Image 1 (tube, one colour):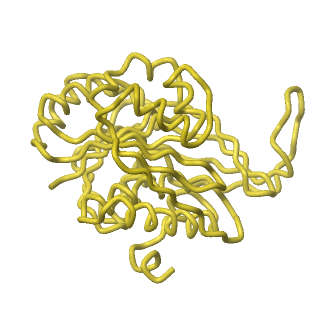
Image 2: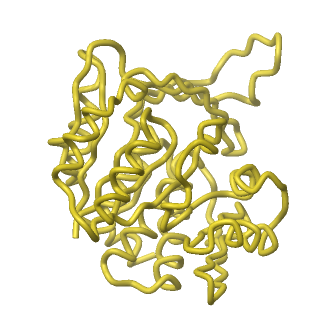
Length: 294
């Protein structure tokens, strides 16, 4: 069973600040670091570090994205399906406040240059029963979902960042949603909280399994029959940038490797706790052994 993560590859420019920049304000940063990132890259690394076999498909620009491919390779991710295109690699400007919170501005770059013909070529390598993991940081997401559905792949969607395109995707094809309360409310066109919101989303997509993340209150899981609740593991927070991506990677990685949903949720919560205790996005993602020993 293969996992295809068709996702973003970004360069993260991370600035440490006292507080997030306000409108009209010029603010000096305490430091600046450059990291590999993008929700796609982070989730591929988390999937691979969980022990799963993962292929990353996506695109980088010429001249500035090579180190992202090397970062994936060093984590054990198969990178044969990554295209190198004319232009710039996607990047993010991240403000990291003293309390560990972050504020992110994205530039799509090569991530937004994915074409249908590129998708067709990638999908030739996968078959029924394989997993497709998607976020919302590349182009042609709807078409990718359609092709995966035709092949009877299992589709995992983390609909972040949320924008108007989400409503245009064939969401009825999704087997697993992993999302927060704001994203779930936007998809339902009705805001809510916790279990009530979870059930509203389930009513709209009754065939899907849903993981709803609740920040400091942990997460909920619903598969149409059973409700699972998972708390967080409290640690000293250094950087929350890759917390959600780490959680997603270890949860799906756990399922693919035979864990039931309850065990996978607990494993993912431990992995996310380790990640937020460290600086950076991809560099903060723990190994399987670290999570097992947490």
